[in-house]
Length: 332
Image 1 (cartoon, rainbow, N blue to C red):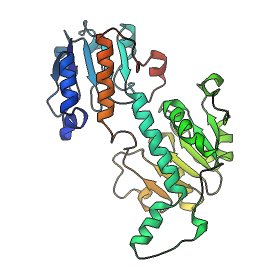
Image 2: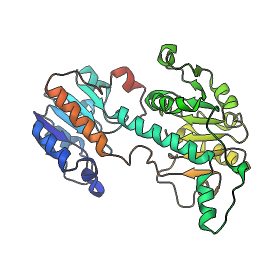
Image 3: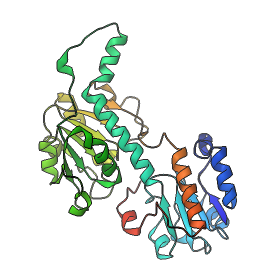
Image 4: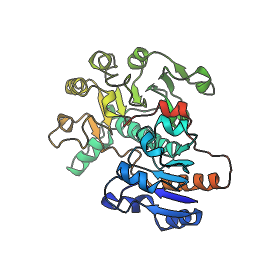
């Protein structure tokens, strides 16, 4: 089996994905060609390198496998993505040619769900602000600053794999969860007695915590605009670890400015977030640099090496992305 790894070695990126153990495991599966450069492979380079390869491994900063490229990849059978969404990296033509696509989407979703739960608990307990005060010499044990997650109402904008993992994490807290997602069936949440499908307006008006899990598509850009954000309850918490463009930034800034709501934001319209961006000014927002899932990399790669091994042995895959799921994934 011949394998091409297209991930560029920017900032020693390859080492953070492929430690020595993972490299050895991959080498045991076949002959591996690496992108040793610091830039994404060009379309011409892909056309030159892909012929004769049965497996292609993609990741952040990999180039898209376009129809033009794939026409030269007559032997390609599997694309394994060491990340979440495959939408920026594959194309309809990949599926039309019968190429199997898999990704570590489940692994990343679990890690992001953990981040969201941690963000909820940290925010409800006001831990960042209390920590700053303690380090400044203060000792404020005021009980009014602490809220609990138990028996609250949590709203989901989009379910997705992240939302499903988050449901499992939230279950012990006896919460009620309201889900807005026009693409899911009732059967998908049938096993969760505490979950109800509702419209977007009800999610926003009845939830004290709103977490966004929707993919970035034409339909979801600025889904939460000023009229929608104004529907949120006073003192509610908004969490976005999906894509920045789902929220209209200026509208969110205006809401945060009133102090009526708070937010935890891992994603932004502009990335990196400019040093002078208004969002950096607010005490009622926690900011992280798009690292809810991407900071933990080796489990993503290890999962895909396992998947390649299963593929080589003609065993059932555990992380295949069907075309229907690919079409609903975040585009960038």
